[in-house]
Image 1 (cartoon, helix red, strand yellow):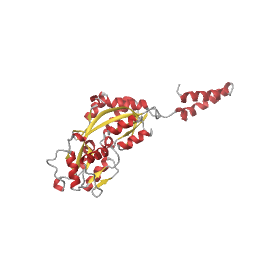
Image 2 (spheres, rainbow, N blue to C red):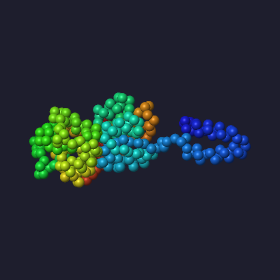
Image 3 (cartoon, rainbow, N blue to C red):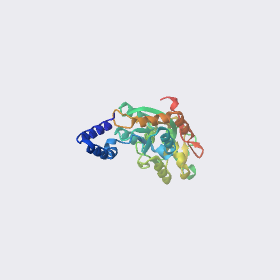
Image 4 (spheres, rainbow, N blue to C red):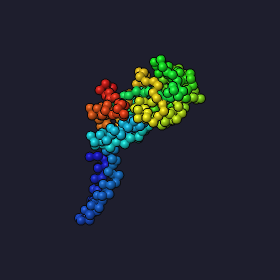
Length: 293
């Protein structure tokens, strides 16, 4: 018997024993509705809270997948879309049940520190660099074969670059590339906006600037943007997504609901639907749960 049910039964027993005959049962009957609607009933065990990256939200992926997850599992999933750093921070506090993120080193640290369990890699896409076309004053990157060369040329030309600046998975990747390029950005042409991917792309478009974006969000927003893809395809731009439950031994979370989501996303139906998700005929994400974790 659960704690709430045990407390409720003991409470009713003490009250009912203090009365005799019909009076006892009348009082008992009067208390039933109150008990059913009181805090003894406990939280809604069907609600599961997800901290997910803005890219899965901005691209429409979560709105596409979650109705099917709910239908198949019986749980109700509520999302909060933030950068990976913030999602992991919320997970550490136990304010969500499951996190869906894309920064492997930070995820492994999260697990090693005892905050996350059941980490599962389930899909990937890639990052691309977008910026103004050469016809409108953009840099000519033809002949350049590495992302490091691209960033070095942006630095050398002091071309305006808009960064998410929010400790998201995309921001972490961007900082890694600047470190590889050995050319730290200068505030005179580098703008950190502290926004999600969709808003960052909007600002970059308004300023005619370069930025790093995940391909999924770019495909979702490209028709409204004056920018274009100026570089893609480098191994360093690979973008793996993972999902994991917050550790139920550390926080009182809905572990069955979190586990159901992880199992669904890495299962046959989830993997098939991820591969089938398209915008304008283009596939945004690639399922890879079976590639091993």
